[in-house]
Length: 368
Image (cartoon, rainbow, N blue to C red; front, side, top):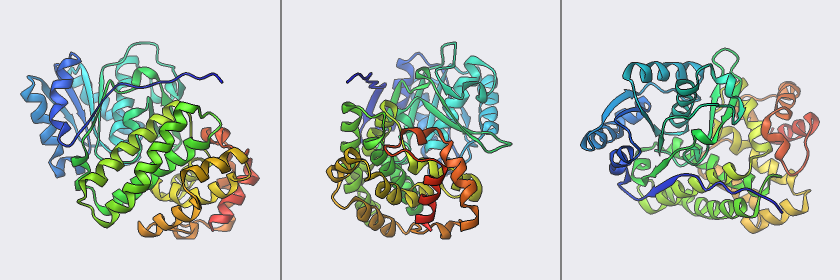
């Protein structure tokens, strides 16, 4: 019956809200802003629009636009180098979860020194961090409403979840117009990831009544919006539902945790290079089926959507994402290795049904 609610920073939600980026940066005391983004965002013209907003507010922009998908310690190190050379005093992340995570990782190292491994875990930064503004261009990770940076070790590929309340965005700018330029494949993968966040946070062991409310609202926004954006990519209202739903799901993660779908997805990404959204979408229906052994989880799933597994499979099919693990390279012989790794994932302990390596192996087998 005890919980601590973390509402997060200021949220601006509106078409065209990117234009407020400079004003918000100035309000936070920024004068030289590190803009962390990726080549795709530059090509879409969003980088130039963000820079223009900063300059109209009288601020200087230092640009690092070389973020890669699934960022590693190398990406963070390059961003830190750009930040130091530019003598910046505020960080702005513009892009998908990779850009936002790289921006947060940069903030850790720039202000507290050391390396990302030093912050693997929760609240390990001893010194204050720079103000951070998060501007997502995908409706997926919900990183704009979380204090965690997910960074992989460049050598081992081990993903490190580095969380600290000081790393959370002071402002999250949600502009659905930014998501209109996303290719269908990106929309599909990020949308499934956001849905998985809503489903897993709704039943995880760490959920609270408040986090569960975020999960439920997020699911209904995403469930309604996802099919619409797949059928009509230019539907701005549906894009808005997806972006807000992803942010609410991210807020639910910040106040609770995830589960076995993410635990089993990460080894697929590590071993086969499977896109995160593909991997988590592939595993999610099987995790839902297994978790129905827990009466509370079973009831919650039915509150979200009667026949939830079937609905998820239908959305995967509509999104043209794999429905079988063999499509991403998994074979039966590899299952013991992946299952052992999945059981050691941080999120595994919060799944409503306890799963050891044998239980994880059953999930992979079902996905085959």
